[in-house]
Length: 285
View (cartoon, rainbow, N blue to C red):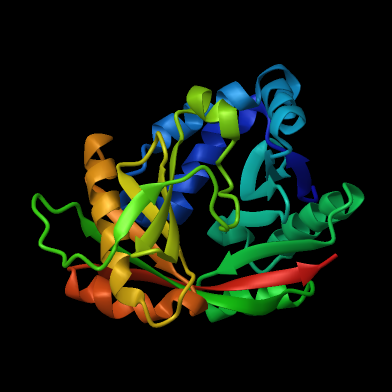
């Protein structure tokens, strides 16, 4: 029987969660992710034929769905599609005995077909190794960015120098986070805090503090506005330490892109360790 590509249904959630454990267990553990809670959320979202997901899409313009590759009733591969201003493909995993049989390509091609049908012109995804990069390049993806993820436990005390000061703001010029659903964050338990960093009257940096309900790790996303003023990053770190401690998180992570790689030295001095590196890929539809 050929493998079929379908949208995740409620009856497939248990198998989907097992594949998450197999494929991403170590990484999810490092982020303090509660995989069982992901399963509960998936069951709710896939209830009533996926009605909750459709309501979120209508309300926020943000869509999310999981594609599964099935051999009969067995789920043998998964891929998550996040729709927004520019959609993202994440969480691709194929069980070992079904690899090198075109299952991953089938999932990706089906995702691209659906996105193109919905009017999107571009899609992004991340790969963690050269084999995965070669795979997605077969369907038209090309490298567009490099990212390193740094992480450390939250410090009890901080001795960072005063390089600037942080202000909360309603808007920052950062790409909208995939799980940021605006007013619906109150229902999903996602916490978002937007920060601008100033030195005197000059705005030098912007950041977004993100805490997901199923993780014990908070994340800082950052954009440098004024090159050469990297020392003001200390103010953003301080704000992150305080906010995530207040929310009961135990660790903090910072993904650095090509345009923020100069902050790596500060993170290393502050006790952060590089956990992962990956390549951001982009495809025109």
